[in-house]
Length: 112
Image (spheres, one colour):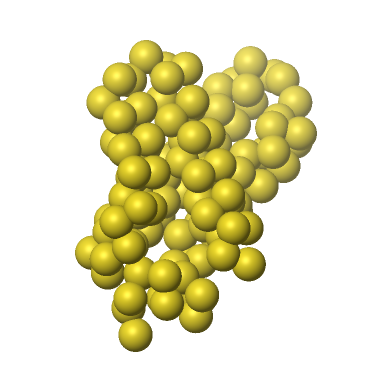
């Protein structure tokens, strides 16, 4: 269970970093990838930092989804598949943030 949690968190952060890289936002890339190192700290504050980045990442994905849907609709292009894909990305990113509220992750980060 612990390995699955870490894999999901790392995957979410890497995909978020790739999103920022696609738009040439180096600061966003660093902010997205730096929390991966905090997975080794195992302190309560580290868990909260990672969790905050994941929640903000889910919000960023939602804003991106809105902008892309508006653009595609203005161009008369279909958006259904893109909405489904980005909705899944938003769900996984938000779920990764919620994993820090599970008993397993609370034990790892000594948040009991």
